[in-house]
Amino acid sequence: MVGDQLKHKTPEQLRLAAREGHFNETTSGLAPGFVQCNLVIIPQHYASDFADFCRRNPKPCPLLAVSPMAGDVSLPELGPDIDVRTDISRYRRWENGVLVEEPSNLLNHWCSDHVAFALGCSFSFEEALLADGLEIRNISEGVNVPMFRTNLPCFSAGPFAGNLVVSMRPMTPKDAIRAIQICTRFPAVHGAPIHFGDPAQIGINNLQQPDFGDAVSIKEGEVPLFWACGVTPQVALENAKLPVAFTHAPGHMLVSDKPNTGLAIL
Amino acid sequence: MVGDQLKHKTPEQLRLAAREGHFNETTSGLAPGFVQCNLVIIPQHYASDFADFCRRNPKPCPLLAVSPMAGDVSLPELGPDIDVRTDISRYRRWENGVLVEEPSNLLNHWCSDHVAFALGCSFSFEEALLADGLEIRNISEGVNVPMFRTNLPCFSAGPFAGNLVVSMRPMTPKDAIRAIQICTRFPAVHGAPIHFGDPAQIGINNLQQPDFGDAVSIKEGEVPLFWACGVTPQVALENAKLPVAFTHAPGHMLVSDKPNTGLAIL
Image (cartoon, rainbow over all chains, first blue to last red; front, side, top):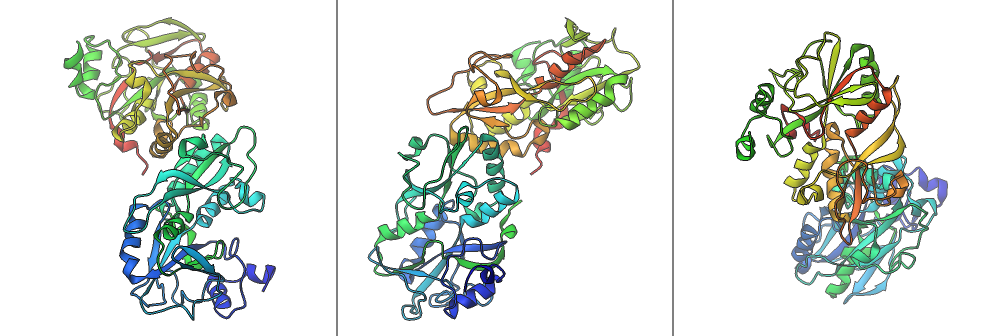
């Protein structure tokens, strides 16, 4: 399935297409207006610690939904028909913190002690910024947002630990102030930036060499803004070296029925 | 009247003390928790244009109250007993845009076609920032906040025109983000900063040479934040060269019965 066909799909139609194997693209720009989520699936033994990691680090790990019980493939808060084994267009399977493969579904991997966590994603606040007329450089330049490992440690929980990962978007100071205001309304999708200006203050050496994603241009008079990023829990997951874990593949998000505007606290 | 005696006065007691000639100090730090206002008094002929200037430039000129009618000395929205001729501890009298004298009251100057305007002041948001644990450099260093003329023109109205004047407070980026969030809640007292970082972008050459107030130190890793300032309408008033006008003297504000927290829109 391609281009225009995808653009007009509802979240439910996109999930069904992924489930039936007709859709294996990234989800950026699809189902505009609806919340897309990072997905983490781990054995129940680690679920309490991971939930605690999210609770203690809400800016990088804003938890939107958890499986109603271990082995339950639904996430009713995000859509009545969701099946976390099949509804994402590409998954990642991890063993002992190492990426093993990128399966198109988890039907052969899911078992009764698995628990799924859905976390907020930057697509929601980017939509709110665009709606306000702000430019988002990674979107203008058609690339993935640049992401950087910082020297800011997360609060750890059980085996889950690591430094904060941030995404970076350059803006004029005036637009940056407006972006801080807008993102403050959306704590469930990373909230306000955690830093702006000098990257060295948070342990970033070179803005043109991101640790994840792609570099973007920074124009004269602009300052870099840094947001807590959903790659943070993935790094914590790698560090935890669980015997088995699953995530979405980058850019292949879980598309929910929840409207982005419904995440605004104000 | 001095020090400790003043600290425990209510807004009404401070106004009465000014009215009776027992109080001629500045009002910074007095009646904590209550809104203090900039005051502008002009002939009715210019009142509509001045109200329009405030409406068009709400960040530097947040209008809190206007005389119920020309010649009326009360401002009932700000306190039941206010007399704008006497309740400020020091006034300024202007003729043709030139400062003529600093009288302690306006009993000999007030006439039936005068209209008073009360505008929000930075003391209210400074209190909200302090309450959140942020440091405000001009308060730590015991000086007046540094203020600067910018190259940003206000929208003009009739004879009232001029560039925006800003106040500057240096903060770490983290505190600056928090300050933007807090001040966003208080649009009636200048709201969020209008700029941060490079002063040259808004026409300021040297942060150590303010146009009004005193210089403050800026520490390693801090950025300057710039707020729209209540000196802006005073500059517009000077530019307008009205035959006669009155304002409060700098730091001698009208102390109202309105709680600062009541200005929060959220």
